[in-house]
Length: 151
Image (cartoon, rainbow, N blue to C red; front, side, top):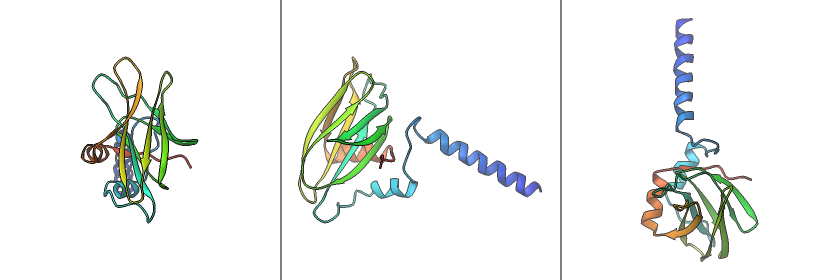
């Protein structure tokens, strides 16, 4: 009986620790899916990969941002969370919004390409979306968690 009780205590402690690591209000992806995105593998044949991360810029506070690509809403990104989306080549309107502001960035993608965008709130409250280098984008992804996109 003590072994069962001790096992339950360890399991509850582990689950509480896991919950404490997850960003509030944002469903995160399965850890295997998170790890897969952090390998930065090439996109599927004929496709492009786009990473979008919500980053805590100086003085921003990084509130949760709702992210969409054209008419497709991906879901919500909290501070230090990100999405990886594979898209057909083309130009896309990527938007991030909070309750008060919206930002957008048009990105053109080619087959086999990988791009990194960040979404953040500027000092003063305006939401911005912009492209960053591969190196900078990878650092944001490696330091965060993959959010689970809406289906």
